Length: 106
Image (cartoon, rainbow, N blue to C red; front, side, top):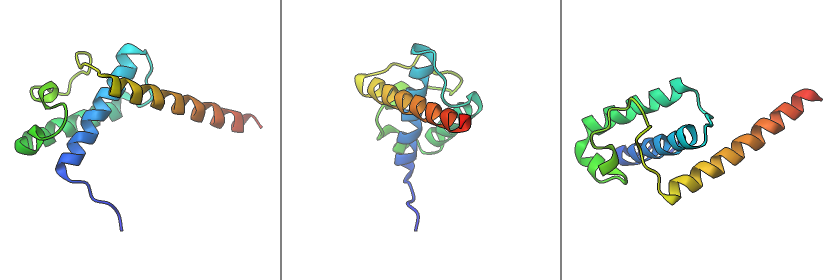
């Protein structure tokens, strides 16, 4: 059986994704997810926050996202936890890309 996320867990997941990938894009000039995927996640987050305002208030980073419209991550702020997650994800992605490129060469 699969694991079903609660609304609060999904809001948290999307907020973290917005923060991590916005940090990578705006601060590191790296893009590891297509813009279309980021936009899909952003729209889903905005929809969830509007549909479930009480749950949204109970999830981390509420103040940062309470009036967020999903159009851009340019003005989001990043704490050390977000930066650390982003840096780890970037390293893992670069290893994965290098490994798949090497496999294609042989």
